[in-house]
Image (cartoon, rainbow, N blue to C red; front, side):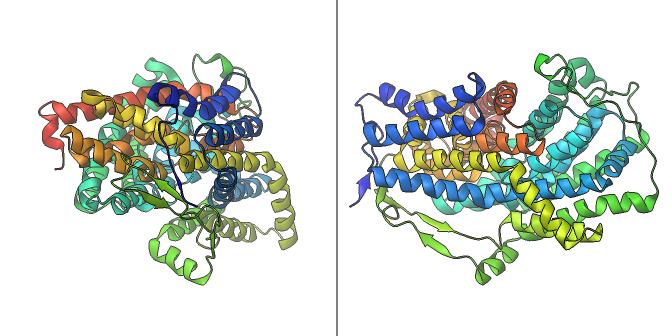
Length: 553
């Protein structure tokens, strides 16, 4: 029996929207204000979502349960699989002392914590976003920053803030490619339009990042380096997205940014070296910094050996992100499991789609092609190069599983919540509330993308969820569909720092367990403020010359 989604079950959009928001509010309040453990807050949110979906929206209980299970499976692979294996690699490098040598080598480029943050969280993180996405950049950069002595809140929160502007072109352009494929946008047109929105924020985010860490004065002391980092990312981002395509935007822009910043630091140094690893003026982050450790000069051979596991990781992640490699591995082993009782039994209804459309529910166990598998192989190879025995590697892997057990459970529950809201139509009710904003739609449509990523944890998923609605609303209001389709993705990137799975990844990478609420409270202002700025810029592109000339028709 087919069940059709209903988006206004109470006959009042206000009341329906308030009820649809309950599961998200339960989780966020539990995390941010009640200080519940992340897996308990996520579990409470999931239970409330099941109740709202079944009792208010009329979704059959069996369908609600299976939707949550499908989300949980997706949470394990690929998201949890990435977290588990990157922590395994980090554990290996810490135990044999190579991570300390790596830290010293980075400090050899610059001892200034602000510049280290630029290099690692923004530029290096953008490369991993472009190559792999799906939590990889936050896991890698937060782990490196905590190893350098940054406090857990600084390492977690600042990695999340940095991982914004590159997200729309993450995983070799997957969000843009998916948006075009699923909703019928022209790929180059939508890539170009996003590439005319995000470069401004690729320039802004590095300044914002350092301001969030060191304050206005600390930011102004290194503004030339910040400008180099941002400009050398923003210009390639614009050029590649507009004239080549979405696939290699982040990879090329990140490599340019890293190279330019390192070269610039060979000829320019700040007058004052910033040694603090705490967030300036943030009470929750005081007194947690690691003791200052003297920087040691190491032999070149030792530095190379320390970087080998991370170089191997970079190579493997990039290879695993290539579509031809993914297709090859999927051809070898990628069983598909149709979720009986859910697959093709739910229909999305107008105005979200032009005509009733059945929702598929197929879980693809693409273990070989998953980015986490590439990370695992790189960790094993790096461990063997570092002369770990096979038995020692197995023992360490078991310890890592135990270390991240609650984080994996949290990711499963949160993805279950996000998937259930999608299949039940709760998230669409929230999206329609934004869509009813009339002339203010360019602003609120952008925030719809932000909401989509905050709920689902993925710019790709947000584009699938709301990309069609953006197109329909734009046509009805006389706006460019390409403008609003791009706004969904560009606004969505600012929701990445508050989505539950990213916060769990950050807390796990820094081993700051049970502090997800602290991270959420810290990054929330930055997320909503930056999303609103994107919304204002999109509104200017919609109505105000000369910004209207930037719009791809």
